[in-house]
Structure formats: C-alpha cells, structure tokens
Image (cartoon, rainbow, N blue to C red; front, side):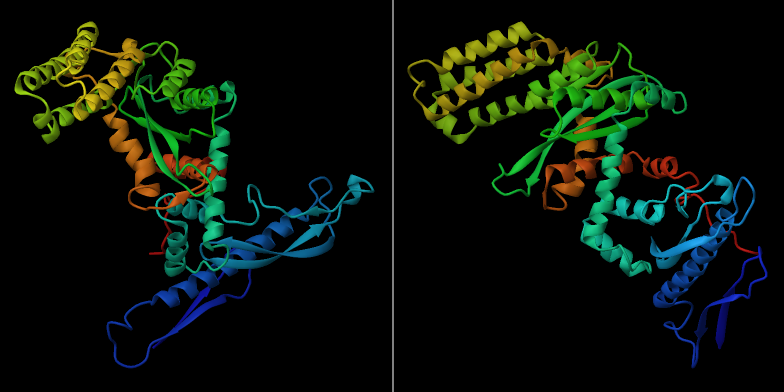
Length: 463
C-alpha cells in the first residue's frame, strides 16, 4: 500500500507539489498502523517549506509593483535568509528592489520585509520556547521540542534562553510606559477596582562568583473586586524602591483602578513598606499575621523545649508560658499596648538572677527583643486580627505565599528545580512566568503580532 500526499494552491495554476510518499508493506501490525513520528516530522517540514516559499514569492511579486505608477520594480540582488519555525528552518532568497523611476534618482534599494517579523523567527516558535522555558529548564525545553517537532534550527538551549529572556525584557519595558498609554489600555481591559495587594519575598541561589550565595525576589498578587488577580515580581537588587513602586502602580493601573480602599499585606519588611508608601500612599497597610505568629511559635518552641524545662524551675517556667499565651491573645485582638507590656513582663522575669545566666534565658531574651523591635517598627500596621477573621476578611499573605511565591519562584527556580541564576536572567524570566501564571502570555503575543493564532484556531478539514 502506497500513499502520495500532494498540495496545491488555488490561487494559481501551478503543478501540485508532492509532500511525501508513505508506503506500507507486509502484514498490518501495531507499529505500522498510522503515521510514525519521523514521518509526521518530514511531512510537516515539507509542507512548511512549500508554504513559506509560496507566501514569500507572492509577497515579492506584490511589493515589486510600485504603488504610485504601478510599474514593476527591478531586482538589484538577493540575499539568503533562514526562516526559523516550529516546523523546521526554510531557506528563502529575499530580493532587494531598486527604486522606481517615479520616485526620482538616488532612491536606495529596498529589501522585501514582512510586517512584525524580527530576525526571520516565527512568533509561534518564540511563544512556545518562552512558554516552555518558563516552566522547565532550557535544555529540557530544547530536547522536548526536538523530540516532538521537526524544529532543527534555532533550538539550542542557549537560543531558547536568549529568546525567553528577550520576551521577558520586552515585557519589563512595557511596564515603564507613560501613564497615558496605560490609561488607554485600561479603557479596553478594565477589571474593576483593586481591593487587596499582597507582597512577599523569596530567595534563589546566585550563580555569580564571589556572590553572597543567594539574592532576593519580591513577588506580589493584586486582587480585583471581581475576583480576578494579577501577578508581579522583580529582583530586589535590580530595582530601587521608587522604580519598584512605579512597577506596582503601573501593574495596578494596567487593568484596574487605584482607589483609597486598597488593603496591603506585607511581612513587615521596611523596604516593602517604603515601596508601598511610594506607590499607594493612601492604602491601608496590615502586618501579615503568619509572619507575626511565626516569631511567637519560635519562642514557644524554645520555652517548651527540653533545655528550658531542665534549666527553669517550675515556679519560673509556668508564668513564662502564661505570659506568652497572653501575649499572643493580645496581638490577635489588636491590643498592641497590652502586648508590649506583656513583653516587658517576660523580659523582667528572664532577667531574674536565678535564671538570667541560663543559656535558654539568654536566647529567649534575644528573641523577645527582636519581637519587640518588630512590633514597634510595625505598630501602625497591626490590626484586630480576630475581628477581621470573624468578619471573613483577610489577615495574612497566604494568597501570596501559597500562589505567587510557589508559582513564580519555587516551582521553576528553587524547590522543584535546584539551579543557580543571575539576577538579570532571573528577573527577565520572572516577567514571562508571571504572564504565564496569569494565563495572559498568548494575549501578549497577539498584541505584539496582530493575527497571531496561538492555540485558538484549528485546521479546517474538508468534509
């Protein structure tokens, strides 16, 4: 059994082009039923080559006609280019056209160009490489594409990395648009007022020699009134607080409205507080309950540990446990003055001569002083967490920690895939990953390349 696959264009009377011949001999078996992967790769590559060559030839014929006098331009010379796509590279001869006589003498030759096409790379190849690179390592991206598709050129891991980071840098540049341009886009994609903003941080390993070992990310989640959300992130060492504040403001303005009723959650980091004050000066800032109670949990573990039970007499240990529980209750209900007084009472007991020199007492004094300093620095951000919890309101950055940090950083750069990064490369890839997590990467390419189909259009099969 032998099959011949032909394609032809309905726009001209050219001879049909033979794409492939598939032959099956012998008894039918599971291995010989249908197309093989190698045959499908060759089929796709041949169809792509014929389609690209025909389209380019049609474009050349169209651009050779002068729009003024409709005279056919002459060709000065040719140069060869390779159009790189998911279905293989296609070598194309692209001419330079001499100027028309109606344009006057001295008109320079003009190279035939395709709108929005940069370096003769298919937008879909750039999209797929960037999408996969935001999820899996660059080498695995190249291997996966090579396994499934006839992509042979421009698919090395270094090329995948360069393309993905180029997309990230372009996304990063768009965030620094003027407010007028952002407002023009808001009128088309307005999702309602912003209600909540959460910021948190994470760390990844640094690949640079003589580095400190890791560098810090700041990631955030913006929640809108209609339950939509938007992600953002940046490397802290790259952007100042003012630039990061501008980034946050532009990200909010991109699809929502900046109102006075925004609630912001952070872990109490002074840098994040300055960032928020510059971007959202009228927002209500609330200290994250998780980060606050985590400090209390460390104190409780020390106090209930074996060493503390051995070193502290019962008449000292029991009052300290009661004071610590009372401290947590006061913080939960927003009694900051009472909480500070309770901390001072704990410090007083830890300084009593009987236990002051004990190792556990020294450690607890250090921890309780850090907690006191932490509360004083964030005194204006403490809330009545119990009341907010009973009213169904947020009290922590769990929606950032469980989603933004894990989705943007840990799943690609830290926990699941241990590797080292440069700050600039990680920052650029983070922009791609944020768009991917939000499900907007295809929409971004549709905006950059009008007519970009992505995965929305299928092949029309003749019935």
